[in-house]
Image 1 (cartoon, rainbow, N blue to C red):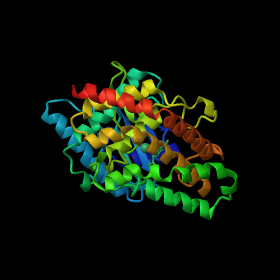
Image 2 (cartoon, protein in one colour):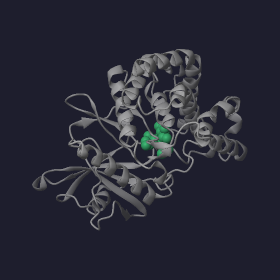
Image 3 (cartoon, rainbow, N blue to C red):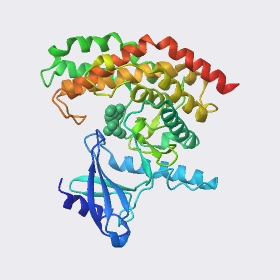
Image 4 (spheres, rainbow, N blue to C red):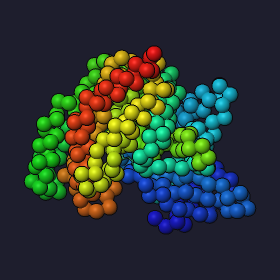
Length: 370
Ligand code: GN1
Ligand code: MG
């Protein structure tokens, strides 16, 4: 998309001054994002402009309603405690007509104030940093503990419903739209073997064994902004998938994405392992915020959630590969297959380390309650 066009959309928001710079930020797999700068006379202020992917988010209004409510709730909670929150929670820039978004060029666009002097990391081997991420996602959940979760729109219905995702996977195998099923028979078998385990968290949620909470649903470490000066986590970002769900989705997905020794699309599978030190660090940070909130059942299911969420994403990548790459942005024709194999390798290592994970959780829980 031409910068000129992006700038014209940016001008639809109540920003200070004239937007003059648009630089695309290409890290996300779903939405498209630009950093917008206003001209020097008006202070060179920076904003984040995003086009919501309407293939993935069928109800962009619901997405924006959720984000408006959740960010307001967190800002109010900080204000009530006398804490300045402009760098601790995302702030939407209203459109010129007062709405939270604009519709332009066939898409829905929204804008945030940029959080300055902060950065994100795509991957970290630093236990201290990963503990900060755990603390940040834990704090996010804690701040929203008194929010009526069921009032939130389900922005992607059944997002972590692994039972339905398994059915969608079988459907993709059957339809074989891209003619690739025969070439990935081993991968397909992997998920058939894990069918029962895959459904365990969603079944616990549906049967009421674990509570429904506000969940973030994309708890990658790069969705936490770190303060440039202190290195501490300051703000959780990427709120499109905030929905009702289980906190086990968030915890499991955070470990899956952040405690791996390799990037999600590393093709050399020998490099893909679960790092138990990172696992411990995140769990420690998360429990430092959530220890009084989580139920005994949730605590018990922490290790299981890591296994389930890893298999879930592996299966989603393979499903998209079978469908002909409709969902995730790809950079090479086999990108989704590489990602699927990578996450399968991680899932296998998690299975090998399951007892060690359980032991670490037990130890941290004991400490948390002592
Ligand atoms: C997508 O675009 P990004 O990186 O925030 C996906 C997540 C996956 C992730 C894997 C809405 O997130 O569920 O875990 O890719 N988001 C959506 O990299 O499907
Ligand atoms: Mg995301």
